[in-house]
Image 1: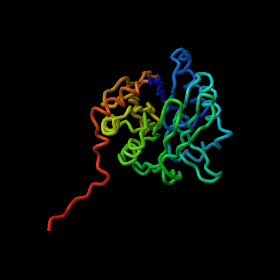
Image 2: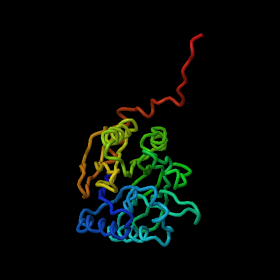
Image 3: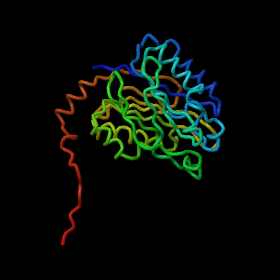
Length: 270
């Protein structure tokens, strides 16, 4: 099976949801002819990653500009959507960094709340947000997709869990710091190689304040760690067609996942 994927990369306007919706609209304009099966947006594309601003920009899911826009593009493109993430209320009390996932009809089929919250130089998501409860594998008409957000990528145990549950594709949406861009590229390729899976990254680019710039480097990576398509630090989209059958055939030829032991224990010498 082949899956047509569009990945969006943009420089967010800090705290301005409507302005950022307009940016994505312009980036996607005229791309309907690509007939994507899946459109992926970055982490916090609606507002940028700026912890003190989180309570100010939080939305209620059903009433949110973010959800209504994602629903409109799902229907317009007849495409599944992994909607990056936005700051959303959970049970009308706590707020979380949440990814909204929709089918081709614009119906919400799942959400994922960021599982690992990030800290950098005194700015800590954990001071403002509630962490998610668990990783999420979403079932779509194109297969099983493992969802992750930014800092999650540093925890290989989560991605191994996805691999052992036979995901066809893993996605990471990021607002990654530019100073650590080499780590993001390396980790993304490593997660693809070690789990023998297509790995797709959708990242923010540009500057959000005087202290923080985003890495860009959105990528579509195959199961051998080869980059099929990539952006640097410019706004734009990338497109690629990925062949799930080729990936499954490679897994049979190179059975790393089958050869992985259930447990690894170090035996102490007496």
